[in-house]
Structure formats: structure tokens, C-alpha cells
Amino acid sequence: MNAKLSKLTPILFAGVAAAGIAVAPSAFADPEPPPPAPPAPGCYNPDGTPCTPSAGPQGAGAEIPGGPGALARSDGHVSAGIPGGPWAKAGPGGGIACVPGGPCRTITLPG
Image 1 (cartoon, rainbow, N blue to C red):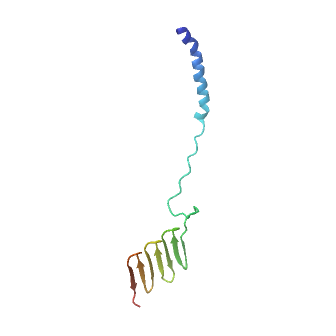
Image 2 (image 1 turned 60 degrees about the horizontal axis):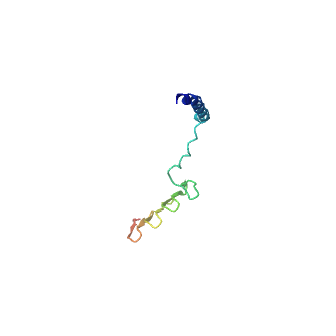
Image 3 (image 1 turned 135 degrees about the vertical axis):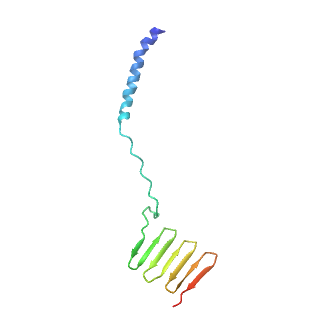
């Protein structure tokens, strides 16, 4: 038995050496680049572009596609709403706010 094992020992060492040589390039290779980062949380249009609120001398507005939006005009009128949900409008003379299927509240300002 010792005679057979002593004859196989060089073959075993050669096999281990060959396996080490075969694995060595991958052991020293550069690691794979990390996966791309997920998009930052926030508002995105259906085409993937970010939502951009706007503001200028005439007023300001912002809207999430298919979601809530708001507008403020330079003449003092404002509005905001959620599709299928509550909404409100107001101006220098007063305002109104409504809940779907519920009451609306109107406030008239004197003047």
C-alpha cells in the first residue's frame, strides 16, 4: 500500500499545483464593479426624467405626474389638489376647499 501511495504522491502534488496556477489569475484580478446605484428618492415623470417645479415672476407651481399638484400665482390666487381627492382654491377674496363625497367649505373675506 505504501508503494502505491508513494507513487501517487507526485501526481497529487502536481494536481494541486495545477489547480493553484489555474485559480491564481482570478485571485489577483480586479473585483467586479459594484452595481449601479438605485435612483434617488423623489419625483420622477413616467419617462424617468425628474419632476421640475417652476417658479418665476408670474408665480410658482409643482406637480407629481398623476398625483398632487399646487399653483401659486402672482395675483394672489392659489390652488392645490389631489386627483380624485381633496382640493382647494383661494384668492384675495376668500377660498373654497372640498372633499370628494363630503362637504365643501367656502370662506368669503370682507373687502
